[in-house]
Length: 175
Image (cartoon, rainbow, N blue to C red):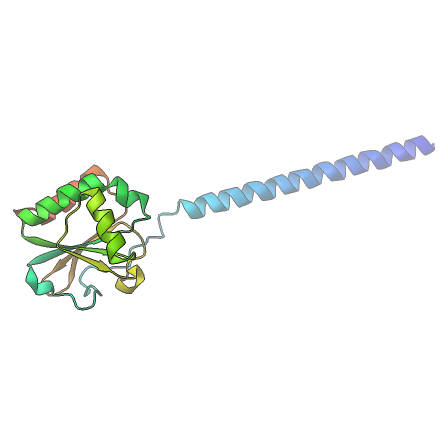
């Protein structure tokens, strides 16, 4: 009889352990699902620059051109570096369309100039700014600003080819 009692206790312990394993596994799965949904939620967007609002760049002379294209970049942004070919073409289109180009980077002017030179991007003006000061929360960000300083359009992140064509069409000679 003592063997039966020990066997019953062992079975109960085994059942309790199995239930605990299932509960822990369900908790882990729930955690992964919650994290996956949070990481892939389209509801959150870094878009903080509002179309129609004044662009918050201090001492900007927007009147120098009918349109101005602001490129918010960073030397540490791999998407910025990967998009260098597009930015080269974009700057050429801006020049042809008489659109002034301004690069904003959080790094020092020396670092920013070296980075842009290395990428072959020749803009009209380079400024060191804290990107949150101009309501930019991520790089790369492109902002088209009119001569009154109002935001006409904004593009965020590394752009798909169709979005690149959209930007080019808005700044080119026929814009």
